[in-house]
Image 1 (cartoon, rainbow over the protein chains, first blue to last red):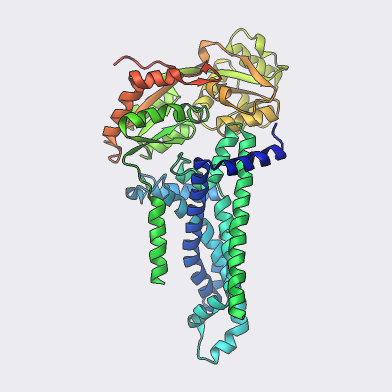
Image 2: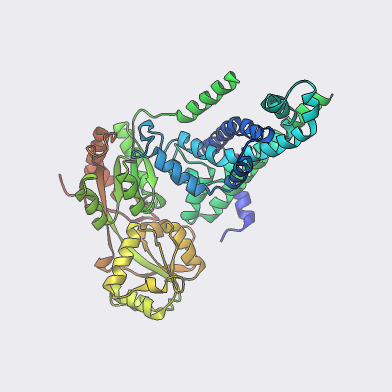
Length: 235
Length: 270
């Protein structure tokens, strides 16, 4: 039985070996998950902001629903997207099943509620603080959204990071819609599942260490960018 | 904002990229992938034909269901009754024998149920049920699971009544099920190839083997283009000709795990 120390060593060895397959898998993981987060943010941030600044009947219900969707089970999303993209499904003609695009679609569905819900919270707090101020410039309702999103950008990076964490760590959805095809749709999490099922637990754990390292790097990068831009804006 | 959307669309398209010249999707089983067989033989076909084979490895039950939906071009599975039904119902063109190996019963080395001394496979299953020692089943409608259920029935046993006590259904692939069996010091039925390639055997070993009832035949089926017109018939025909022909059959025979042959080609001469 491999211990954690062995796996750590194996992980280091893998990274240093510059194994082309490993880097292709890491690259695909990043490409799929980051693309999904960018798309989810383009949808979720404006949607969350609209929910924050407008008042309409049923608004509370929509907020509860979106908050609940943050907990969507990846397997269920994978299954639903599979049924849509299957050759027998409504979008079968697009032939997207078992492609990275299918994986991106599934992850957008998983991540969008998280970014929407967290953005709503951030913008609502900003709105409570600045509504009167913005009102004195004649800005009300949805017209305040661009300003509030911009002023709340540091809070919103947390929403982005939550989305990245969700996307890069999930296996249930990408396994079903991607099919874990070698060199085509194999990402970090599906590789870990495969190595576990081969009984190669040491390798699986080593890949897990690399995945965690990847998540830390992405977070550190975004934190660094946030800090740099904060320095710029307050200098 | 428009530039941002353009960037996103470009990103999506690039993620969709890396399109090979031509490929087919093979719905297959975890045993052929986890053992490394497909990784060993398919590159030879790709080199000869220029056709890439994309493998989706799931249980036989799920592979057949995916194929019914038209998701894939060709099947390589191992559950004869389900395969024949698939063809009979018009989802597949025809079914051909490709290769075989056999199932084995694995368990803890001290063999508390005493199956090592069984007269035959049915006797082994009776001993398992009588001893009520833990047995881990796939429980996922895979080829191995269907074969296991058939053996219990032939042995006159109904272990599902004890599901959750000594009879444990994982609902997972072969390797995941073996991980459970090793952790619980339980028995399990597995195909020989997956066991040979399995890296987490612990102190488990093969305790019963060699009954002809444990025969494990693999078949290949082209998905019917009349039902699903997007199936790449020409490429599938090339693939069938290869795997059923001299080169494919030799590639299967040449595949070794620890110096041991674990798949035996037996396609009919065409």
